[in-house]
Length: 109
Image (cartoon, rainbow, N blue to C red; front, side):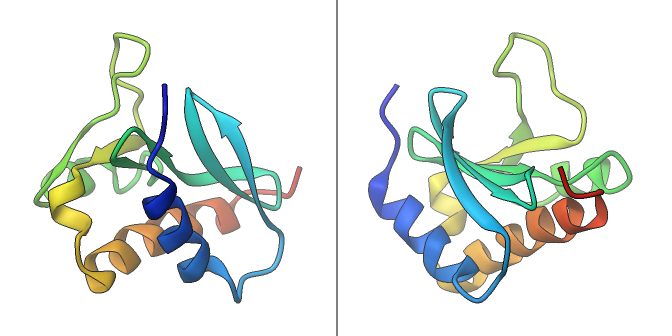
């Protein structure tokens, strides 16, 4: 599956000041890892965000968010965000920050 290079570049710009960030092809798209832990990524035109189990339900209540069901079953703690919801830098930053915060809360790999 191809992924949006434009969205990937926008995410890189959001994360450019953070240390320990690398991108890696995963899930048929591109994932951004922080200290070895996935924080967010791009699948097709959508943003994938690892928000964690504690804020999962609140994240699903946000506009444009839905369960990440890549495997056919919802992946608790991870959401897809529609391309329409992340058109502005502010909304993209909102989601990237959620993924970054969760990844930084985990032990480095």
